[in-house]
Length: 248
Image 1 (cartoon, rainbow, N blue to C red):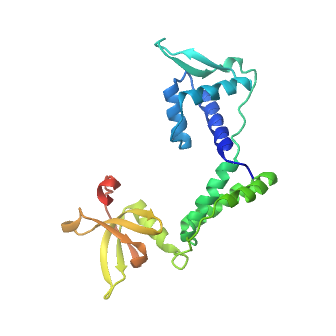
Image 2 (image 1 turned 90 degrees about the horizontal axis):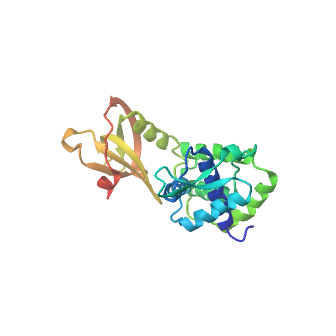
Image 3 (image 1 turned 90 degrees about the vertical axis):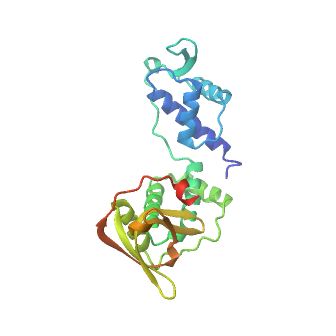
C-alpha cells in the first residue's frame, strides 16, 4: 500500500502537463496552464512555483520544455519543442492506483442504485477496467482500497429497477409523466420532469407541474414516495433554468 496518494496526484499532474504542452501550437503562460490543469484534474490549488518545478522535471526526463517569449514579448510561456523531440513519443496514458481507488469509492457511493441503469453502467465500466488491469496493479488496488470504507449505502431501488430508467428517459426526451404518489389516499399528478437530484442519502425528482396555472412552481419529490410513473405521449419544451435558483 502506498504511504500516501500525493505522489500519484503528482504523476497525474505531470502527465497531464506533458499532454497539454504536446497539443499546444504556441507557448502557454502560467495562468493558462494552471487553469487547464485545475479543470482537468479537479485541483483546488496549483501555484506557478509548482508548475515551474513540474516543467523543469519534464526537462530533466529528456523532454525539451522551453520557456519562450509570448507574442507580445512581455511574458513568457511554456512549450514543447517538437522539432527536437528526436522521436520521443508520449505513451498512452495509463490507469493509476489513485484513479482506481477513486473509482472504487465512487462505485460504493452508488450502492443505493444497485439494480438500476446507473449500477449497470458502473459495473460495465468496472469490468472493462479490471479486464485490462495488470495483475500487479490489481493486487495493489486490493490493498490500497482498504484506506476507505463507505458505510450505510444499502441498495434501495433494486426492487424497482425501471424507476430511474423511466425517469431519466422522460427527462432526456422531454416527455410528460404521470406519477402516482404515496399517501392516504394516493395522489396522481402530471409533471414535466427536469432533473434527478442526488443528495445522499436522498434521491429526488425535480419537476414542474404540467398544469399551466402552476407551471412555474418547482416540485421536488422524494422518489421513494413515487408508487408508479407512466411516461405520456405529450412532450414539452425543456426549461433553461439554473438549479440554484429553484432548489436553493
